[in-house]
Structures are given as structure tokens and as C-alpha cells.
Length: 499
Image (cartoon, rainbow, N blue to C red):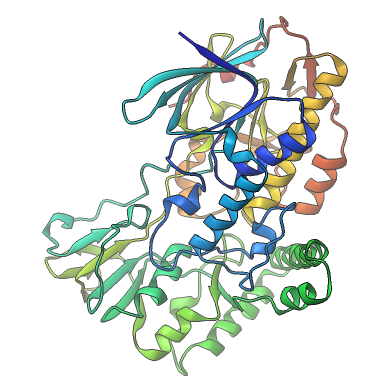
């Protein structure tokens, strides 16, 4: 059996994987690397999702890469534009030459004697087994299951005579023109779908179990577009990026310190965009702003659709599907020709891969995350996981930078193994994510833990992470370095996977 050997193996060719490729080329130019991508094209989320109106829910000056300015007029960009940006980035930096498509990773085993990961994958539709070897494994495969979205068990589903669609698997030729559509959900996907489908459908109803906080902002950033006219594009981009980062941090802090005031501020602005006398109960959540992710409504398009009468919002609990639509528990009947189940994702960390360290199986939910990117007792393995309260790429950039610092430090010190060790008895175990969103709560039992203090604490703060990951000490007392042959013994609780 042939084993291809590289210094660094990256899994996933979406935003994080392309970011990793750039950083490795730039900061670790002597290291060989390959990117394994399960799909047949790059882009990750922006290749997978094809539903109408697919767009970013963050501005492109922070969702874009730090090293490549976003130059389009629209700051809230559509999916195809984002995919084009990613493709051009990968091409211009030669990252695309390192991508191996249709390579699905199944198993990764670490051997301390050789200080290497042996990674088993399946290639192509025939699932041909292939093997790679690498000193460092960098998981950039996102945070959810690409194969299967989340759909609750709806009673009577088989009775419905129309078409049922999940946004994660959108039919290419779905014809909804002149039809009645019900979109189940109130998250970012539903908020995107409703105004877009309302342009051609007979009517679209957003059916939600409970409301979500929404904010409207212009699709174009006038400041960014103005700066680009008078400054070099990289400088204009950097200034806009920091403007948006600082405002996001300020807004998040205000939401934490004065939740009632921020709640009122958001609701007042939504109310101003709705028809006079509209029932605000449909837009008033039971939680505080940023207890779940905010939904972005570019140019108020959802509210415009409601004003025009082409869309409406219904709040209630589903009793069952019927032949002609949906019946709610209060007896309300909603007729539909098409039902879209925008009911969320199945959160999946580390791609669902089986991991072993020196022959012992590792359960991620029995580890504690180091700097929100590595795992206690697990050597030479990092993952890219973005912010819940800001753009994904902000954290991906910093994570990629830190991985390069770690690799370079091992070279400098003549070591081959970097493993976080939890040796501080004062560190208390906490849930990794504090979001109350359904997709997070459903997955908590399978996620690693975070600690009560640095470097085990998960910060949702770009400034803190910038100081820590880009400028902080690599040798901080928790990150340990060893030579090949020094066996890593994982803490006992890690050795058996929790079911």
C-alpha cells in the first residue's frame, strides 16, 4: 500500500482550508502540505448550499480573508460571489494545486514513536482506500454534517401531497413560481429564503416555533466603498475590517452588559420597518440579543416582502402535516404546495472522523479545548472553528497563524510533538459553547469542554484572541513539546468514547 507523506495535512477546502493553505505557503514555506476535500469542488458551505438567495450573514470585509481584500460593492454578498472570491484566492496563491478532491477522511491514528498521523481516506465514488502520513493534522472541515441537515419528525409527513425540501439539499430544478410556500424556521436560512422566494411564489409563509432577533443593514457599506475610491484597496479594506470588528465587539459587549436596552433598541428598529400595527409578537424572542446568533436582513428585504403582502410570519407549534399543508396545535391550517424545512444543521466537530492516539481511541467530548483550537492530551492536531458572535474567518485567520507559529517553534526547538496538557487544578470544566440555539444544544453532549481560565477558555473576542494567538507566548505552561518517541499518554477520561 502506497502512503503519501506530507508535513501538514489539511482536511477541508472551504474558507478555513484555503486560509490554512495561504498561511502555510507564507509562514511555513519549507513545509509540504495537502488539502483533502470530500466534495468535488472547493468552497465548503458556499459550494454546498444552492437555495434561492443564498448569501452571507456577515459582512465580507470580515468574512473575507485578512490577506485578500474584498473589492465588490456589496458587503453582504450572494453565494456565487463568495464562491468566486474563494476560487480566485485559491488559484492566485497556488493553493488549488494542493487540493485533492473526493477524498473523504475516515480515520486518523497518531503514533508517538514516529511523531506522525496516519490518515485513512476514501477516494472517489468507488471509495478507493488511500492513506496519508503527516506530522501535523489540521481539521478545517467546518462545524456541521454536510451529508445530512436537521429535520424534526413531523407527524403526517407522508400524507402531504406537495413537495418537501431541505435547504441543504435544494433540488436544482425546483419550480415554485405561482405556488404557495411554507418555510419552517426563523434562522438565517429562512430569513434569506422567504423574501427571495416571495418574488415569484404566490405567497410565502415563514412558520416559526419562536421568534429570532433580526437586524437590518444596507447590503452595501458606503464607508468601505468611499474609502476604496481614495485609498489603496488593501488599506481601505483593513480600515473597514477594523471598523466592523470594533463595532461588532462594542455591540456584543453592550448586549451582555445592558441586555434589556439592546433588546429594545433592536425591536424598535424592526418595528419601524414593518407595516403599522403589525403584531410584534412575531419578532420578539424570549431570550436576549446574542444568546443566539442574530439574523441579518440586508436592505430590510424580509420586511419589504411582509409589507407588500407577498409574505407573512406565523408563530405556532406544528401538530401535523396534512394532504394540503400544515395544521398547528391551535387548529390553524396553512395551505402549501411546497414545504421548506429550514430547521437547522446537525453540528459535527472534526468531521466525525475516528481518532486514535498510540492505539487508544479518543472521544473529543472527553477532552478540553486549548485556545479553542486544540485538545488536551491530543498531539499535533488543531481545528478551525469560527466565532458565534462575529465572522467565521476572523477566528480562522488567527487559528491558521497560530498553527504556523507552533510548527515553526517545533522546528526551532528540534521537537516534533506539541501537545496541550491540562495540569492546572484550578481550571473548572464548562460547556464549550454557551449559545441556546437548538443546533448547539442538540450537540453539547458530543462536544469537548472549555475551561474556566486561559488558555482553556473559549473567547468570543477577536481582540483577546489576536493578542493571544498572534503575539502570546507559544510556551505557556500548558503547551508541551517533545521529541519523536516520547509517548503521549492521554488522561484516563479521554480513553473511552462517551455514547
